[in-house]
Image (tube, rainbow, N blue to C red; front, side, top):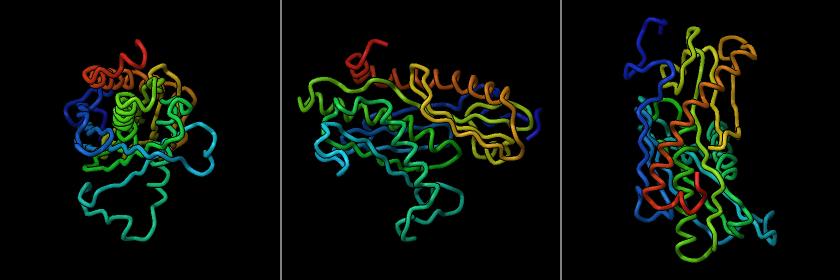
Length: 253
């Protein structure tokens, strides 16, 4: 892709793909959300369990964890189900740990009590940015599950302390691009995933010089671009949650 070539959807370098989040997508999950970012689609379902991992028993604190998988026809060539391979790939393990860390940053785990919430993140269609989309939709699904606990008077206060979202940025042929699709990601000189709270606090930064080392100045420019994109994503999250009368319960943004 040359600098003169247009991005997909005729996007400007600092423009997100169209973002849509559909809450309560599943009837039987404790909370769920489908996110669409361009062609990338991820479905996240939350399940509440009245138990915690052994290392938290007696602590009074809860836990949030995640599982991540790509469905077989989410890519152009069929992706085999990992359970048929007998093990989880290193990539999937890394991503689900990232999602878990990100979502734990959004919640007061003591306020959750000794219970666990599992977020199942299934990639329906992949066109770049599936891990960051999983975090963004996961936060909405998690918030809805927490609201269910509050509505059922299992907890007395909503333990949601932040919103958390993620976005990718990169350097492609010398240009700073926000929200890379697969074609851009595969050509990026520098590729970065940024996860942060809506208070501007970073949770995770994964930055890789794919084709060359990068400077601190470039790193800071990428972080600023990610910050701009994340604020727009937070606006989408807030809009969805306000319609569920949820965000007002957590805090007045």
